Image (cartoon, rainbow, N blue to C red):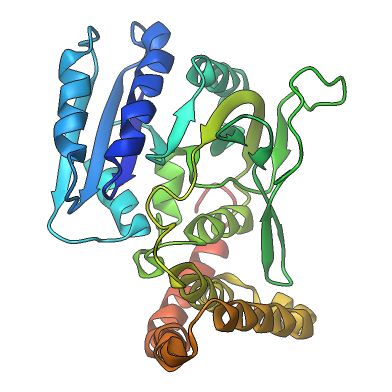
Length: 325
């Protein structure tokens, strides 16, 4: 097994200084038997992200992995950056790592043990993501319903490492957050990879839904622990998240939902989209509201033909017999 680790970055030096050493520590015990490559996709950072990346890896005593930097001259967004990294990757498993994640020393060991144990049973592997202080869960994967809602499993609950009731054995789940996850690259490419039109947010829900509709499964490895220092890139971007959430949920429904599901859950889907609208209004100063509505709903109208075309392509893919997709 070999792994390509893709790190999207925008002015994330203050996070990379902790993220990268934790990554190296986790890889050390495995480098003898498993090739790794690390690809930083930098979206026109103006801080010292790139020089820091080079410094950390050039000064590491580990030499038997390769690293590469993709330097963009503008911010391509999260999903397009991931696709850039995948297109440059050499190996069979793709690891997505947010720049504001710190991983535990045994994270890769625990995940790889499960990949060996399960062979080709699962297309996606993920662990437990905690808050930066380790006190609460941030995500144990994604829980989705067709009413148009997706939540991080266990989000906000206290994490008690020694609690007898804590989940320790691996189990199948609906899908994974893209903050830290491993995908089978061949399967990810088969479903079309990440959708560049999402730019940021909900792109992992879109990928997980397409995987589910083609019967590709996700395994949670609860004892593979990581820590999210949160909002590394987008915490100071105003109502950007609400605009993206509003737009991207329409993309998911138009592009991925079977028509039978749309008809079955149409009232609930409508209510959830009203909640998106309410969140957008609450997060937007009144003088910016017209522009924000155009950015969200206007984009949906502009991209509707493209989403319908993607829907047609995916429906053809999902109609293939098992093993042919």
